[in-house]
Amino acid sequence: MKRETRFSEIKLVLLTLLVSGCLYAMPVVYSSRLYHLIRDAARPGLILVQQIKAWESTVAKPESPDPRTEQLERQLNESEQANRRLELQTLQVSEELQRLKQTGVPNYQTHSSDRLLVPDLLEAQILGESAISLLREGQFLNQGQEQGVFESSFVLESDYPLIDQGIAQGIKAGYALYAGQAVIGKIDEVGSWTSSLIPITSVKYRGSARIARRTEQGLQLGTDGILVGLGEGKCELLQIPPTESIQVGQDVYTGEVDRELPLSMQSTLGQPMYYGRVVEAELPRGAPYWKIIVEPAVKLSEVKQVSVLRQIINPRRMLAN
Image 1 (tube, rainbow, N blue to C red):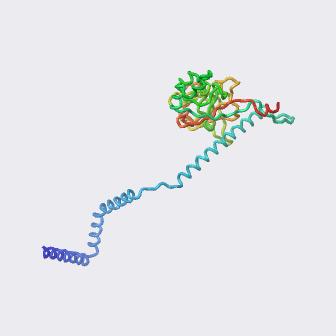
Image 2: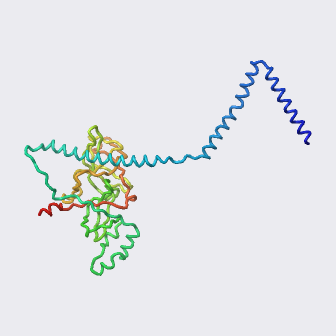
Image 3: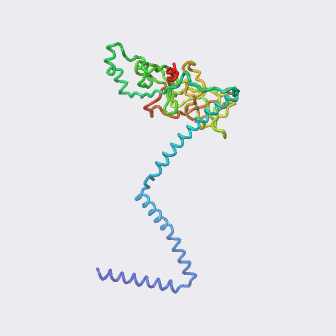
């Protein structure tokens, strides 16, 4: 067996030497053609081998996340928040400038004074299902019930989310609720210690709103309309005339006057608050108004803490008296 193997190896070596000698002695024209023929025949196999090696290296060494990505995303979010604050300040200054142009500047010197009514943002927590269940069972307020203090049943039975503030904290129906600078809803029913809130996506929600357009002078607010909830995670902006220029991606802010509230409960923040962005805009032929769909800036399911906008008498005025 060993002799046959050795004899086969010798024959293979002699055959290789014979082929090499023939190729060496062959004219350049023929050897070049033979070389190119062999190269073309082997090319698909070489390409396949290279692709397999590249795939193996990709599988063997998965791309590790760049630690700078999270830092850049965080910086981007901070920059967007800073830009939004500057945009709100620009809107406030633009409105004040417009009022001055319309009314004129008095020739006499005026002195600034403290406002009688000032905004007051009260922090509140959105209650979870377990807390609401305990409230319904009376376990939170057993001691208070003996003194005649108990939670209103219509609040506890509401299908809307609840917050942990009520009549005792001066909460009233219709007060606006915010998550940062974004509007998330308004107070519906008020109990002794809790209140239910209407999200802006609810079909029961209505509020004044207007679209802000970006110009060279900054953001400019359009005509006031009415924002209503569609009950499907989105809202619709009504009563915007066809003379307005509407585009997808424009921002929607609160209106100057909320026609759904009495004047005694109007917002006193002094600046527009943010609803969200336009995701659909259509002006049907012959229609008196635009059809505008708005996506809220904040989802209520992602919020645990809110701010309730109250209106109180300026403490400085009270101290002055």
